[in-house]
Amino acid sequence: MKLLAFNHIYNPVNALKSALTATSGKVKFSFTLSIIIMMCMVMESNAQSRKYLSQFNQLQSYFNPALTGYEGSVVRGLVRNQWSGFEGSPQTYFLSAEIDPMEMSGSEDAALLGNTAAGLHLLHDSFGPFRQTEMLLSYGARVRISRTTNLRLGVAANYSSVRLDGNNLTTEQINDPTVNSYLNQFATMQVMDFNAGLAITHQNYYFSYGFQNVANGRVNRGDVFIKEKPFVNVFQTGFRQTLSSQFTILTSMMYRTQNDLPYNFEVNVKLMALDKFWVGVGHRTDYANSYQFGYLMDNIRFGYAYEVPVSKSYLISNPSHEFMVSYYLFKKGGNKATASSIIW
Picture 1 (cartoon, rainbow, N blue to C red):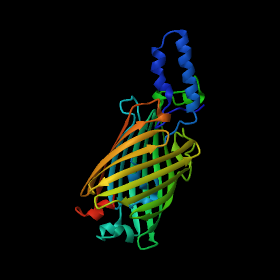
Picture 2 (picture 1 turned 180 degrees about the horizontal axis):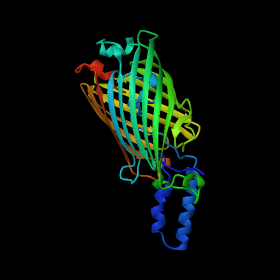
Picture 3 (picture 1 turned 135 degrees about the vertical axis):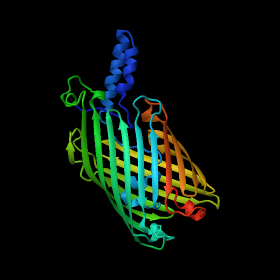
Picture 4 (picture 1 turned 90 degrees about the horizontal axis):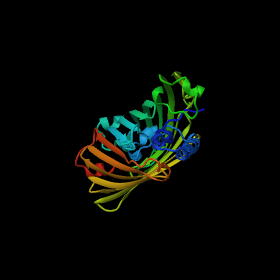
């Protein structure tokens, strides 16, 4: 039998334990137990560790290394508190740095004329009995194919360490031999894998395709409690449309597929005003709506997203919060043209 954990699609067994404890009488007990069994059967195929981020459009290079350096040399930090107020809810911490050597040399049009960029991405995620720390080293190369457009290629080495806390395991079956070997103890495994991708980029739009887990997680060591990682396809695109000297509309979309999970489609639409602040809305098909706003001042950008579960996430009604800050290393403050070209 499989281990059931949660990270963004929740295992309802833990959520319903309190209902079972508080219920009295044989009829109520049988009814509640039936619900638990049915929900376990549904969730067996969905237990997973896919990372959901409402502000995905500001983290393009994490999903596709070809977009490393697309927004220049920047340091980013993000904190996501999913299902705020719910005990044991997923927590995500993200930190990254991207460097474009052409910007370091002082070029005014580095995004178009530069040839390479490199990035380091760190992510720590806790969900149920798991604690995952992930590190990506990405490299992107670009070739100018027109006066305003680049073709980008990228690769990334992905190292992750996953820790399993056997004290927090939830099982489908008593005396399950797969689970019993990890009960009341800790297990840790390390996985080495690779990501790659390509993209066509312009100041006002981009199209990209990336794939993750090329080796399916087979390069590993330690306590191997996850036999393989699924191959993931990631499609991303974004468009920027200037309405006037004061307003710009930005639209971003992401579509992900992998064998063991349903597809994931997300879209964000933002209105940026005066090259200083923005408001926006987002939708993750069947799972959540988000409301976003942010502020840009000189080289620093702040962003916040408030996410509300819908449809398939109805069992957990608690909202999620995301806070993000970005610092652009070599941008010149006070340049409106520069400010409007570094935001997605």
